Image (cartoon, rainbow, N blue to C red):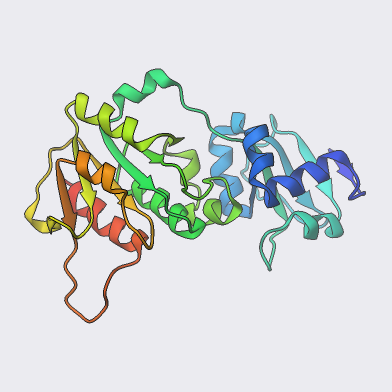
Amino acid sequence: MKRIESSQNALVKHWKKLVTTRKERDQSKEFLVEGFHLVEEAMKNDETILSLIIRDGVEIPEGWSIESIKLVEITEAIAKEISETGQSQGIYAHCRQPQQAEEDYASWKKLLMIDAVQDPGNVGTMIRTADAAGMDAVILGVGTADPFNPKTVRSAQGSHFNIPIVKGNLVEWTAKAKEAGVQVLGTGLKNAVNHSDIWPQAEFALIVGNEGSGVDPDLLAMADNTVKIPMYGKAESLNVAVATGILLYTYSKL
């Protein structure tokens, strides 16, 4: 087991940047996960893990298969520097970002497309919900929060290792879906029908949009239908992640 005691170590500096800067994550195609649950989820595909990092005094749970994983022990001071949570459990995994081959795209027939949703917690929750609802992939459009932001990763609770997540141009993805015969549903208020009045095909794409401005009008113009969730109380709208959960569970069971 390697041990690092200096915060000036190049690897420690890299870990800190993975936590704090999107540029570092984008350029390296790596990210850091924190906590026993997320590390255990990452270990389901140990080829994803570059190293398992443990703080002094933290024990690896019995039953974890770590023979093929590089272990690094760090001091409590370093753990505080790379931790993103207030109550760190002292265990981390330095991971490669899962990459998707373009030849896999054609097999995806149930898509969640996220248009410029800016809150990492919302994006992470939607990734987790898409995973739970049995969607094939999540497509993140321009302006959407970084899927590998620590808050996004924490909100997704390990779903990054279960469902493909791709960044792309949603106009192009919507066109591809329609060409493949996949029904596209937008979300909005203008010319919209109640979500319960639409029963999509088994193969469908759902587009959800920015917390304030919603889905881009150009995307809505491409959709086969626009759906809305009726408000029965006095609230004007639902949180985008909550609305996404309602829609995915309404449609994915078909």
